[in-house]
Image (cartoon, rainbow, N blue to C red):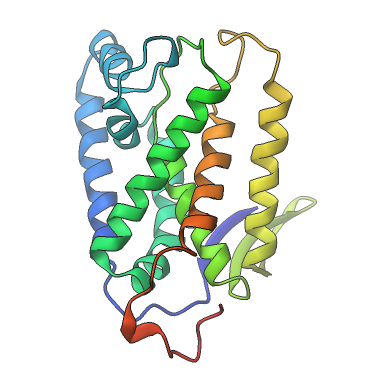
Length: 222
């Protein structure tokens, strides 16, 4: 299933979401210009490596991506869900929220992979936090989703609470499935970072006051 867009209207320009997308794209274009050795060194230095953890990598790892599909997938999800969360939080609070979710996602990855020597990179954990916040605030919004039916493709509107809960449980299930494997034999997806970021966003959004001008909007789903 591939989400295409949501039905929840946004009433402000998502300048932070757009800015995050631009920054991630620019950094990725810089990565592309590097040779393989330099790119691997960049990931090893600025990605999260639990076995030799450095505090600053909790932030820097969020802005690195391992390939075009990694980048496009993350930025697509950020664009679908980010504008509405930014809309209700306001720009500054939304940026702080995004970064906080990314940091918590990184710490979750560290907890479940303490001896890993594999660099972990990507904005997925922070974006998962945005998705968790979206589920908390807009559970009845609908997500237009591309769904395969045998050899055909069709679009279906699915309640946000269903598609996001499904996504979250896939991360949990996959994370438990990798417990017991060595850090070398594990795949390249930081499942627990996704799950930790999502849970952080879901609960943190309940502690953050939304922007006053949105409190009485009739189309918000609380």
